[in-house]
Amino acid sequence: MAVHGPCPPGPAPSASDGKVSRKIEIDAGGVVLQGRLNDSATARALAKAMPFEAEANLWGEEIYFSVPVSQPGENPRDIVERGDLGYWPPGTAFCIFFGPTPSSRGDEIRPASPVNVVGRVEGDANLFRSVPDGAPVRVRLLDP
Image (cartoon, rainbow, N blue to C red):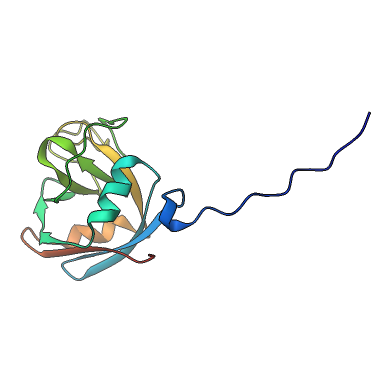
C-alpha cells in the first residue's frame, strides 16, 4: 500500500472572493475602533456598499443607522454579544452592540428583533458608551 503525503495547499483565498474576513474602521463621534466582518452574504453586501456615513441613533447601549443594503434574515439572532456588529433587516440598519438595550433582560444584549451578526469590534466596545445620539458615524473598509 502506497503512503502519500498531504495534498499541497491550494491557493489562498483572496479578499476579493469573499472568503476572507474584511477589516473595517468605525468612527463614531470620534471613537475610532476597528472591526472585522465575517463571511456571510450580509457582510459581503455591506462591504460592497461601504463606506457609510450617517448620524448615530442610540437605543440603550446600541448604535444603529440605516444603510443602503437590503438583505433578508440570515441565521438571525435575538441575543448578541458585546462587540457584535449586526444588520437589522426590518430597518435596513447597521448595528453596533456594546451593552444592554431596552429589550434586554438582565445583562443580556437583545436587539429590538433578530439581527444578522456580520462581524465583531476589535478592541473595547465599551468606548462607544461616550458616543451621543446624533453623532456622525463613518464605517469604511480598510482592506480592498
